[in-house]
Amino acid sequence: DYPKDCPPDVEELGRSTWTFLHSVAAYYPSVASEEERRSALKLVESLARLYPCQSCAEALREELKREKAEGGWEEKSLVLGKAVERGVDFRRWLCGIHNEVNERLGKPKFDCSEELLRKRWKDGWDDGRCDG
Ligand code: FAD
Image (cartoon, helix red, strand yellow):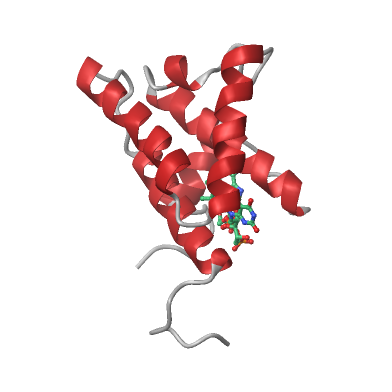
């Protein structure tokens, strides 16, 4: 195993970043203010510029560009600019973008239902294994 006090590799960086992003989304307001919307948008756009894995950042930039041109998830309607208006949509949008990366890497897709996202990133699972 890679020692814990060494710089993160692409996997570790990815896991930590997804943890941060899905946690932000889990606590994002049901209806976001103008300022919160702008901040969420900036957060994702900054990631697409500054994420310290060049090819990952570039893939995200391409994805955002494609989305602007062609439309987003769910019958091509859930684009980031719209998704940041509501927590439920922002969570689903983020899940969709994470699934795009999963697909590219041959990893399984995650079920983007609000219920599963809430259990994974906020409330924990019904069997209590996340309690305590
Ligand atoms: P991760 O994909 O890190 O996921 C962590 C946990 O999130 C999972 O265990 C699961 O419980 C949960 N999860 C999985 N999918 C979803 C979802 N759709 N919605 C909500 N929760 C979910 N790596 C590369 O090699 N090439 C790349 O181009 C690349 N691009 C990346 C772009 C971004 C923006 C980020 C943040 C990371 C990128 N990575 C890339 C890293 C990659 O996505 C993984 O983080 C890394 O491979 C470790 O994978 P993992 O199996 O531990 O799970």
